[in-house]
Amino acid sequence: MNIQLKFNASAHSSDELVILPSFSKGKGDKATLVDSDWTKELRSTFKTIKSASTFKGAKGSSFQFTTTEGLSVLIIGLGEKSDYDYEALRRATAGIVKKISGSNEKASIMIDGFVVKNKIEESMQAFAEAFYMTTYNFDKYLSKKNKPKLKNLFVESSQKTSALKKAQIAFDNGQKVAECVNVGRDFVNEPPNVLNSVTYAKEIEKDVKANLKGVKVKILGKAELKKEKMNMFLSVNNGSAHDARLVHLEYTPKKATKKTKHIALVGKGLTFDTGGYSLKPGGSMMNMKFDMAGSATVYAAFRAAVLLGLDVKVSCFLGMTDNAVNEHATMPDSIVTARNGKTVEILNTDAEGRLVLGDVLSYASDLKPDAIIDAATLTGACLVALGTEVCAVLGNDKKLTDSLLSAAKETDEYMWPLPIIEEWRDDMKGSMSDLKNIGGSSFGGTAKAAAFLENFVGEGVSWAHLDIAGVGDSQKHLPYCPSKGASGIIVRSLVRFLANQK
Ligand code: BES
Ligand code: ZN
Ligand code: ZN
Image 1 (cartoon, protein in one colour):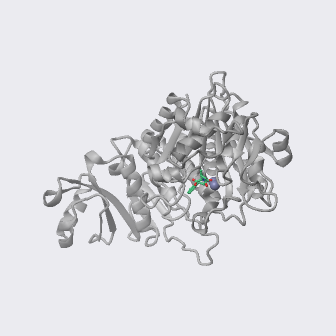
Image 2 (cartoon, protein in one colour):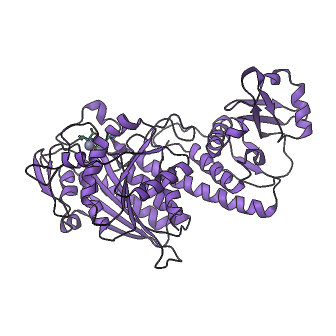
Image 3 (tube, protein in one colour):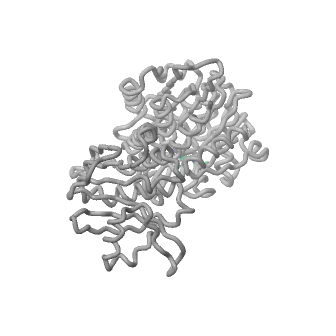
């Protein structure tokens, strides 16, 4: 879809759809329509339409009509003005995209009335994010593609040129973030017969070379991982037809000084999780191509930090392998020595993400960053604790988890903290080895996994862990996410977190 955006567009043509906001005041039968953003002419035309009398600007509602001059007008209901916020704007934008992309070639949106609390820049960023996140679809394997009709969208405003210049920049930033969300979604949706550790690493390198100027790329293969003594990570790769990869990316901002913060992002990149010898049942194995969503999420956030030129140094580590079974696959009861020297008894080969992440966290810790944040589809228990809509955050530094929670709040993504308690740390201790990769019971599974990971974070390093097992996929309740497939949720929280590191 080729969307053109123009501020202050001129007169409307008759083949164009004009989109306007409306609000409502009061509830139920007493609700009245608030049409303060309309022209006098429009208001009087609207009054002459009989069926229009029931339209009260309720949230999620819309009303379309044609004026006597032949102009098509779409009124979007935004509900009570006092409840209207950036998330309401994002959801309304998604609703508009879905409504018009199949029916009109040209449309103009009168943006001023959609602006949240006079904050034009923030509103334009939210609008662009939602717009491009909604137009995403993964149709490369469909013989019949559903081509949208919409070609041109004009964004009209009567604000001063200086304000519009800033609005344009904010819009472009929102578009960049959404583009990165969509790049991440593409990686997650790619099937496992196409995307494996080797092809995934190659594709990331290709994308970095093509789009991220100045970013350093280092790819560690099996031999390098052996040299690094990443035996936990390698134990997961034992049963695979594809060699493991650790992708290490580095972005240093142009104006970096000694004071510039350094954040390390770590992502679980399991291109498929069969469970290994502790094989998943068929139903649970389905969709396990999304077990690399953590790596796609941190890569998308890293990519956005580079494109936005954020003033923070970011290192990104993507641990890639699948968890498969062949005659070399790791057997339960195996004891391996991790990169940091700790011994781990692998009692369940399906608890593989923590084995990969543990060694990568140890590797990332060597750089002594100001903080490490990992993202992973780590536990089914996360869905039991927080549903499919909320991301769990855990860690060893409350200031860090609090700043992630703030970033999530600022971007309207759901994130909630879980504790790591001494009893769960004890539960992960082994009798024949320092640690076991599963706890004694499955209760508290998300936090026990985090209690395991904590052992591999370097001394004195701040660390936070995001379990995205629930939010990584199919966010049906979010109109700017596809109802099926990769969601791209948490990328915006991470980008905001990185932007806040000044
Ligand atoms: N990739 C899964 C976690 C997962 C499960 C994500 C369902 C999304 C939906 C992970 O590798 C796994 O299998 N974890 C096990 C851990 C258990 C064996 C301690 C789980 O959650 O069942
Ligand atoms: Zn698993
Ligand atoms: Zn997994």
